[in-house]
Length: 158
Image 1: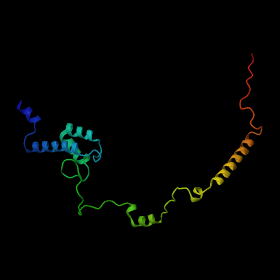
Image 2 (image 1 turned 90 degrees about the vertical axis):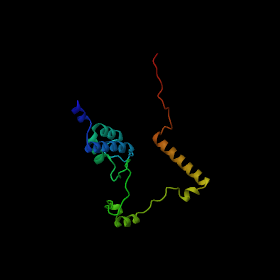
Image 3 (image 1 turned 120 degrees about the vertical axis):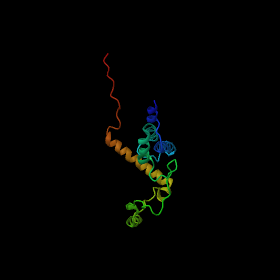
Image 4 (image 1 turned 90 degrees about the horizontal axis):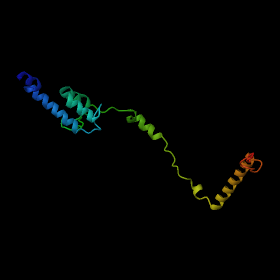
């Protein structure tokens, strides 16, 4: 029976380190913001760490924890130091982009012109009459009879 306990309970400094890392990984997973966690959802990571113990804790450290997180529980980011590499730069960070972006014309606003705003009621009335006359011409071209019966007569044999 004594050998069975030795298998279940890790003994020595290695066991204490293992348990401390495992417990810290659980607390860190719980305390880290869900939006910062990588590769898997937070609850899945929690199950992996709790059920797989040491492999789960190592997987959390290497694959789930936010990049650049400090040692404190919760995965907050360390401030950037001058020794670290500068962030990757894209084309929009270059001097060429800065010069090209200044050449781009800004679009004109989609507001009505002053001619539309200052149009008088008499002008609007004249345009409306012209549109109505145009509509009547089109209707006459489509139906030259002048609007005969819309429905055919019902001839029902009794």
